[in-house]
Structures are given as structure tokens and as C-alpha cells.
Image (tube, rainbow, N blue to C red; front, side, top):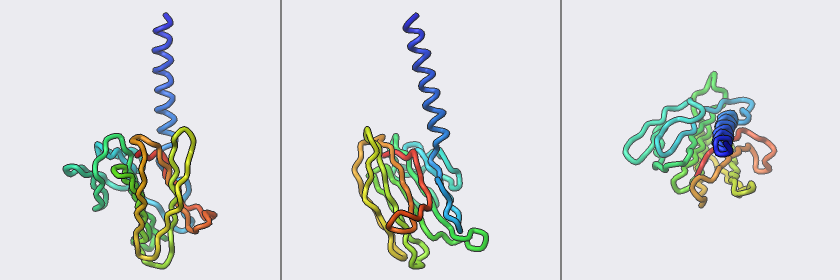
Length: 178
């Protein structure tokens, strides 16, 4: 009888955990006031989309491909590809691109507009408690690649800001994995 209760309790806890994960999906926490984010997070081992379905993810050999960007496959990882377009009604060019690559633990942010504006990314990871990495910022027309080292499966959050003081929040992407 106790074994049956224990199995039912474990099944219930697993279901509650799955629902909580779905409800806190990797999503932009806030949209920049004069633009739009397009994004997808995906299982980097199977190349299957998990959240945000603005881009198609396809598998090609040892890589997942999104919008022409290659991600080396990493079973258990959750990757991110996101772009920001200012004033999407009248402008289709991408101003910023953000990528999380689980294989090798790379966070890449790019200023694709070359307009002199800078985007800053702050990465957080969970290992018993939350820890924060240093701020990573782009310069006009360039990309920055932050290289980190995490245990496979580590939960990753990426917050984006329009200034180095982190007072102008643009978006947050959650439930990513190393």
C-alpha cells in the first residue's frame, strides 16, 4: 500500500513539474517598446522546437540550423535563437541577434544593424542558488561571444538590456540548458 502511494506521489510531482516548466517557458519577459522580438528555443540534441515558434529549426548531420545559423548538437541542451527588429511594421532588418549554444556553452550577441546602439546581455545560471556572470555588450556592427563552462543540464537565463547600468530591460529568455 505504501509503495503504491509513493508511486502515485512521484507521478503527481512529475506532472506538476512538467506543468510548471510549460507555464514558465523560455519567453521574452518584456518587449522593447518600439520593436519586436522573434525567437525560438529548441532541444539541441533533436533540433525540435520547444518554445516560441517564430523560426524553423532543422537538423543537418551533427547540427541544428536556424535562420542560417548552425548549432552543434548537444543532447539535453536547450538552445536559443532570437532577433530584435525595431519598428516591425516599417522595417524588416534585424537590429540584434542573440544565440545560446549549449555545446561549448557560448552566448553570442550581435549588433546586426551597425547603428551605434549597443545591447547588453547578462547570463544567470542555477547551481543550488542563482549566480550571475559578467555583462556582455556589443559594439556597433560587431558580435561578442561569451564562452562559459557549465555542467550539462545547468539551467540558464539570459536577460537583455539597452544600457550597461541594466536599468533599461529589453527581454529575458528562460529555461535554457547547458
